[in-house]
Length: 528
Image (cartoon, rainbow, N blue to C red; front, top):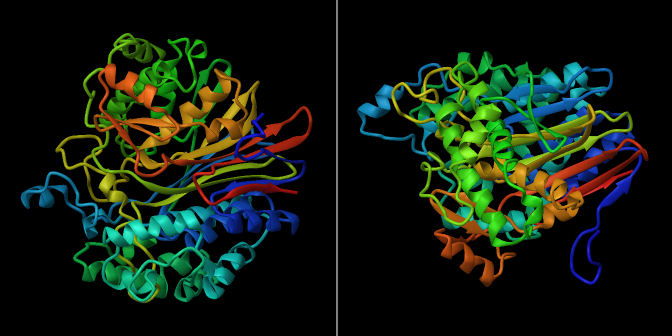
């Protein structure tokens, strides 16, 4: 329970259905879909696609998604991989021959085929109650009539403009009179509305074939890409089995590779060897141990996680024996040198949403174009932003995550669920690119070790050991910062808030839903 003398958010309680997401219009649309007879899948698709209009710097139909779905009558949670592949003609060797050590994040070489639209179509066909046309109608409406730019979105947009993140025709689609829109300015995307109509009418073929696909391929080819119509036509999402670990009787359920969910499970397993509950939740000792465990878990991630067909050591990463050996390397009073360069590519921008309906179908969905405004390139006619997820590859010959034609890169975006006593009790997610596994485990530990409710656990200050620097939010005071520096950490106050989060607790005993939404974003949790 929060202190009502202080600023903060209350948890949101309801009985029928709920959505928690990073923009209020998307949350409202999701609940409207539930009220009109749609289920959690329909609502999640409607909200997710709309977020591409509300938060174009974070996501869009040119990106990828991952989904965890808990459906009534199913024996287990279902995972859907909606990540795209590199074009078939991609060659890591050709880039190495040009003297490149990594894929330039703002280049056409970083553009992988978008996978999210096929995933949405698959979800709708297999699990939805409404037609795809019905679920896409809100996004089409707002793309045409416009969305007032929210404050956090305006901040991100301004930074992207300052850093020249948009190139070529993308500047015409996403800047207003050559500048980033301010909070309250109305952003419209009428050509995206036309692309969404094609999907509503023709399903996945409306995006991966025909006029929309030709626009994307022609635009990428003009930039020097090897992408072709065959690459788009053969793009398909696929179902897979989730992975899980247990932290003090709570199962942490994650998406398997090529997502980095195994990193969260390994991190939780390492931390289970320390009695965090005896520490100050916002003190230096806890932040230090978490930082050290993060260095080790992310080192394993960088060596192991890749395309599902290339990830051969997942069992080793999830092993309790591995976690025990890594935990033994941690000095509770002294920082180790960085175990590795924690991110071989810079991982940043994402939206996350969760929906639970009256039948307790639960969706945990994460959807992204990777960096701010993705690659910075857009298609000439429809203004579809291309993701730069290929920057998640590396160019090390023989590495599991070496870039290659038709391969999926290591992905930072991960949806999560918590399960207790065999029942799903919370779909949740923590945005923030590379931070996400750390964010998942800190959120879990805040609740399990320190008894916080989900909203308090989200509100709590965050830290992240990233590329040799321990980044802290301003919620950590000078005394804590000094203690951590004395332990050997290089300290930096984060320029922007670290990540964002959404969660819905399912209280099966009382028959209620309890929503939580991160104040670091513009959104909210609402239900009915």
